[in-house]
Length: 196
Image: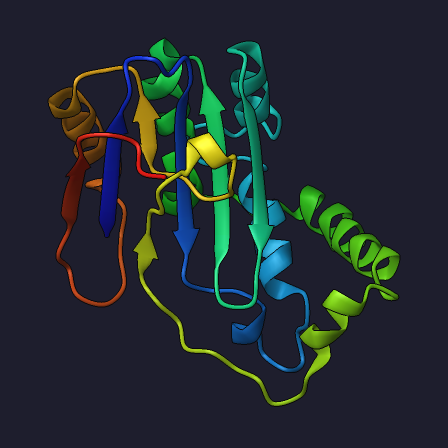
């Protein structure tokens, strides 16, 4: 796992993202929509936080936003929150990738939600490329992308108004128990400033 940390004393938000190296092109041919379905299900309860609404309620209660998107080769999960609430938000967020519940009660509802989103976009030319047959990618490791905050672009690292060494300790503590595929090396990169 690679982690990029950035600290900006002018920043009033803490932000995080995790991009998983699995997207639409990794789906079995007989299970289209599986990556998007998994994206939805990860938000809906974990062993540590079984209430389906806990994560989103915590983020919203502390002035933040959260979202996710499934692309061709990766799925990215993002949030921002008040800086003093980063530890609680990370605790809930990291559980998605450790012990998601995938409850029976949420499964049918989310299958319908993914199907509905797909049906609404059938005429979108950009989405038609998803149907190109025979395109399959290769699974990858987890990684964290940096946020280009000044441009408002998608993708995050951890960013908040704090000292870099505190951020690095917090990131290592939050992600250390998360299982990974591929090599077992973990790395941290520290940025002196948010990169444009």
